[in-house]
Image 1 (cartoon, rainbow over the protein chains, first blue to last red):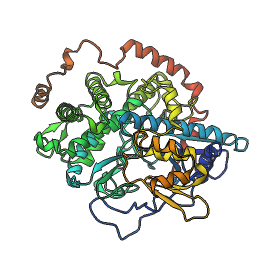
Image 2 (image 1 turned 135 degrees about the vertical axis):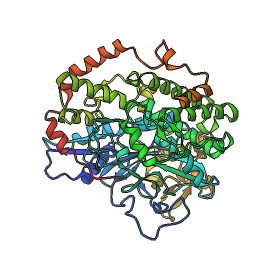
Image 3 (image 1 turned 180 degrees about the vertical axis):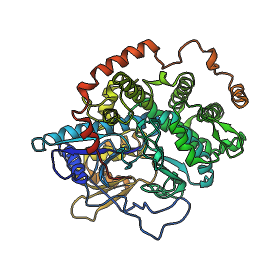
Image 4 (image 1 turned 90 degrees about the vertical axis):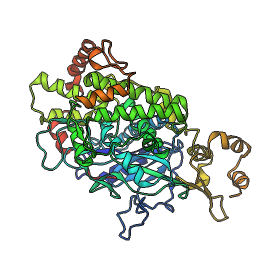
Length: 489
Length: 65
């Protein structure tokens, strides 16, 4: 999961979000070990999953002069456009992905505290885990899923879109008002992002945003895998919503890989997916039917129930190894069923589980008590402040939300890598030999042992380099030179 | 709605919402939630940024991604 955070500086004259983001990240890394630079050799954001590379060069995804760090937990922490962005390490279960996403929030909170010590009097940086400034500018919280390259991309598109559109009923982070051109009578909607999507399929992420993004940059063996880059989700504070977002999507994509929809004779293609995104987001009652391509009418909840039933049958018949095992997969199924039941019975009963419900109850309750209009600045301020990463300022932190993770494990995940992916090798090497590593990327580490040319260690298999694979090797090696010799790099 | 009933039949393990008496797992009781909400609303003004209007106005982001 990769999250771009909103950032503002007060008391500093002209806003300069790039400088502020750099200062924030520098303040954090300065308090840690020596910074490791990112290596851009294999970055190719213009490659398209539909099989072609664009002639027209897009604006580079990342600008090399900007701050860029790799953390010992395997995450990348950097400036993207005008935002601080945290990309969590590769994870093998939904729960672990949420753990590292929450560790990212903690990294940002600590960065704000570290930056506060360096700023002049009267200046203050604040950071928000949201996706919109309420004025038509949006920034993303992207998910990435490893998929089998052999699966036809058209099949992915066909079955991903209905899930992406209807999962909004639990992934939404809530928003006061609307930013969609032409829409005016929206008081509150379920998601932050639905207003910004205009296409079904495409390569863009910053304009004409598509429901399915075709960026084809696998950061691993491109013959075997694709990385599905999912751009339409909201950044979640709620751990339950965050877990459902990645867990249900991983399940749906596993079903796509195994051609489960066709095997069960199911197809939920929507008549108008782009319009349906906003329709779902604007319908707090969750009862408006969507028009399906085959003429049926189903509500988003009904489409989700059917996906759930398909997934449970899939799990019973084929197992849950794509979710990282039975236990991890069953947790997703359990929460999925509970949340759909809850939303069906009484959406407001999900106020301690889902972001949009928590936010709606709080904002609407305040509005009622003080007799305010929906566009009152106080309500808009509450919307923003729900997402403030500083625990003492966060309104999310005051909503009594259910936690799936312990504070200690989140703290530990700020510096310790996950054990079941290549992020483990990256993180452990950075912990042990930061001076010898001059560059890191998702799929390689570059060592400088002095004298010799730089030595590059490729990591093209995301599920290799795990603790089970490399712990013994790392224990045998007391220097990076020994490691490279053992690896034959 | 016929469509809805058909879906229900496909998933017999789920309770019909009309028949549900217990609160689904993870839900809290209405009065419990109301008390918590009142408490939260009592403290909002202390936590909320001082000048809400100025805060909202100054929160301008460049697009990202």
